[in-house]
Length: 77
Image (cartoon, rainbow, N blue to C red; front, side, top):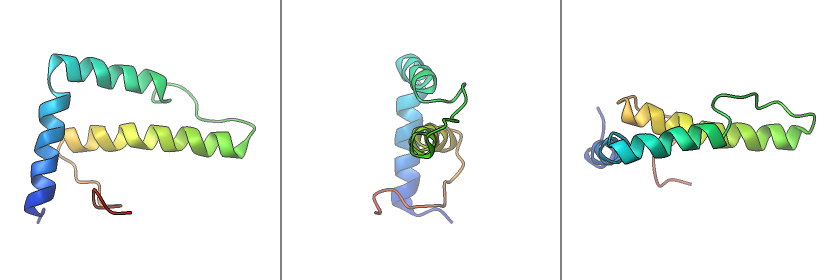
């Protein structure tokens, strides 16, 4: 079961990214942060950086699609 706070946060993500402007912003983020291009670099640190960028976009997409990202709770460190 999803905690009440997480459920509210997911709804907030949906409200923000399901608007016309939110969809434009998400599309821009996908272009800027390696959603549609290779993350590979000969520098392993650059590859890790690019994958980190990409994982943020994937998390946002999961949340607005209603899929809980159970790797970490929002706000935890």
